[in-house]
Length: 288
Ligand code: ATP
Image (tube, rainbow, N blue to C red; front, side, top):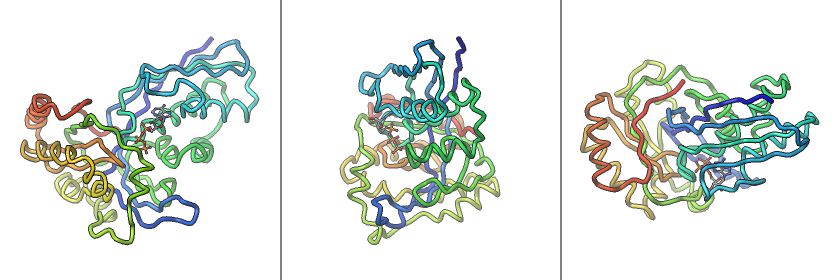
C-alpha cells in the first residue's frame, strides 16, 4: 500500500472581469489568479478493492460520494487507464466551501496529480490540465497554481511571475453564495466599472505591491454585495486598519485584504475576530 499527502491550495482573484455570456451558457472571463496559503490536506491511498473509490471529508455538508470533485477526478483517470486497484481519499477542508476560492476545483486538481503519481500513469501537467477542464473551468489553473492570467472560461492560462509578497487576510463571512446564482444575475453589457487586467499584470511583473493593490477589482462583487452587505463591512474593517486594499474573491463571499505591514495585519485580524463578522479567518500569504 502507498500513501500520498498533497496540499490543495485555494486561490483568490486579484482581478476578475466578466466579458460576455457565451452561446454555450458559460461566460468569457478575464482574471488574475493567485494561489494562497489556505489549503486542504488530501491523503490518497491505494487499496485492494479494485474499482472502489472512497472519499471522506471532515465536513458533513460535503458530499462524501460521487458528486465530490475528488471522486470524479479519481474516477476519470482510473477508468481511462483501467487501474487494477481501488483508492481511498481523505480531504481535510480548510478552504471555505462555496466561498469563491475554488476549493472543490483545487481538491480535484490535487487528486488528478495524486492518482497520476500513485499509479505511475506518466501524464504531463499539460495532459492533466486537458483532462481537468472536463471537470471544472478552474481545474486547469489549480493544476498550474501560482500567479496567472486566466481567460476564456478560465482555462486559457498565461503564467505570470510570482506576485509581490504581502500579509494577506482571508475572511469568510457566515453566509454561502452559489456561483450559479451570481452568474445568473450578472449582466456583462451593463457593467460600469471593470478591472484593468493588463495593468495588474504589469504591476506584478514590476514587483510593485502598492500599485497592484490599488488596481484590485472584481465585477462580481457588485452583484453579491447587494444581497450580502457584510462583505462591505469586512472590507471596511480591513481598510480602516491599514489594508492597502480589500475586495471579494471569485463569486464570493470570501473577502481578502492585502497588507504591507505585519503588525497592522495582525491587529486587523483581532478587530475582525472581536467584530464577529467572520466564520473562517486566516492570516497568510501568496503561494507560488
Ligand atoms: P468556485 O470558486 O470554483 O466557483 P467555490 O470556491 O465558490 O467554487 P467550492 O468550495 O469549490 O466553491 O464548492 C462549490 C460546491 O462544489 C460545493 O457546494 C459542493 O457542493 C461541491 N463540491 C464538490 N466537491 C467538493 C470539494 N472537494 N470541496 C468543496 N466543494 C465541493
